[in-house]
Image 1 (tube, rainbow, N blue to C red):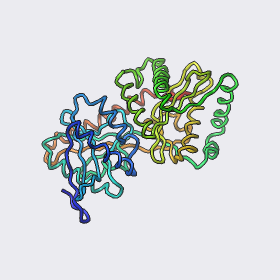
Image 2: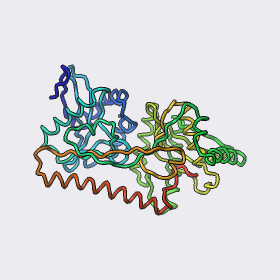
Image 3: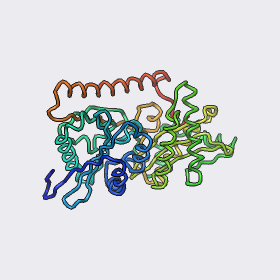
Image 4: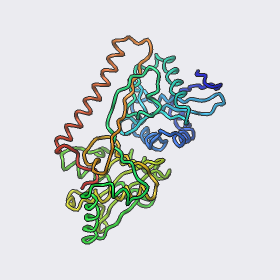
Length: 374
């Protein structure tokens, strides 16, 4: 137990699917209240991920309650081969624990204390894609090293001010490409609704895969399981009001799509796709500009987050860098060489992953083509 300012915080272990479902309301309340939580810490995203990726994993979620029994924090962990990771690991750009504002340190200390008291039940906690301002880096005794770059664009209050912040060439191109398409085609910009979601998601999958198949690479949606996960996630996020799936259609045909989310003051650009046969019209450039316009004018966003990866096209829009962290925790009393081996393996895995991504960028002339094209 953790005693802090006259309150008691107790960590409870949740270990089965029925308990996972019972966490829905506190999970949603914590995600809404947390100042650091992103779309990837929402119940909607996490439930969809767990539904389609739970094979070989055992839920190891920990929730932190105060003395009155109110939930003040949650660590949605799972265990696989003795290693603890956060639900969503692999397909989520940001991962973390959840905590009420001003209770982040209490929650981190309570979780660390419980884990050390139950150290025979896990071998290593490998917490990936954690933002520096999050809860997990506060874990006492954790090792932390820098992870991937996540470029983001600070947004002004008006779209006109945003356009003025761009280079003269890009600003002119945005208008030129849109006018060119409008002269040759009937142009439609569509934001997914309940009536169009299924059609728009299938169009997005197809457009994304076209770009990668042209480079003899599988793409993010080559598997049925990946598409099923994102169909479920998109539907749940549409219900919760967090989905922003933009589609550009010419003469009724989808030619570009941006799969985005919105939470709080941030719009997240997850992935995109475009018809490569129309690259001269740069539909991706036009649609990205429209997505940013929607973020400013409709959602009042102060950030447009391009998420993981330092691809060059992101900086054309004025992106600035920040980096994720990887947090490693081993049980107190573990044989020291083993603890060092686990931490080293985590560092090597991260280094190899980043090297492979940079090699892929170099293969495409120094950068991966923009997800939306253009």
